[in-house]
Length: 253
Ligand code: SAH
Image 1 (cartoon, protein in one colour):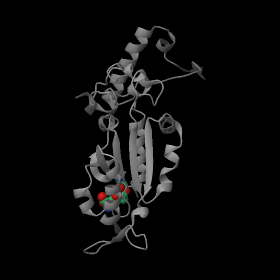
Image 2: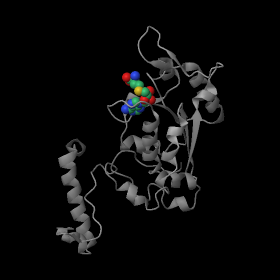
Image 3: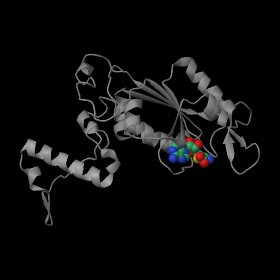
Image 4: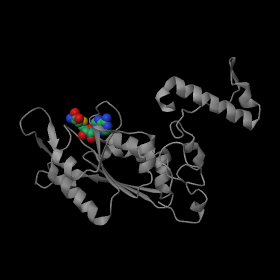
């Protein structure tokens, strides 16, 4: 991607992100390979809304790979019992290694990501960084997770979407992709709308209102109806600060 911008808040200006040069230069496509044992779980998240728009505009390509296609035995096994005993199956290294090695023959990857509850906590800053990648692999775990040797030898980054445990890495992968894709310039037509979201500029978004101006006596703040852009901007900034202070005081430090 030709666009360079600072991944950490404050957010880049549109010009810095290459908003203007985009019209002249061809934008890179972000290529995402997702390795899963449940491809069906990943169908719907990528067939709707903003993510779909990114795919239709060819700004992102998502390739869903069924790990079973890389199984190395006749039963198409992808998991096995845990050495040392204990409940739960572990995803085997052989199919995963074979799959990743096959993918690596075709392209160079910026990151090979494993979705994992004990990974680095996902946030907007990480999303900004990843949205600048060209090629990434996302490995979705299942059961007890993957054989530790996969993590040691094949994975370059481990990401968690929060301190709780899901049954598989597919929903976390969809969360990751959605967050990254909407940051790619051109995916959301009004790009400023992604850049003014909460966390993007180190602040929580101010309250938003739409018609009617008065609903059963519940009124929209007068200032938003005043038509005075400068006052509106000031009000929004003030409310952003207030909200951040109240809801995410740590962000202001
Ligand atoms: N035994 C593991 C949990 C496995 S959950 C442990 O205790 O850490 C099965 C799979 O779901 C994981 O391999 C991972 O890919 C995915 N997963 C579960 N919770 C997740 C989270 N919070 N963030 C990212 N991936 C998660």
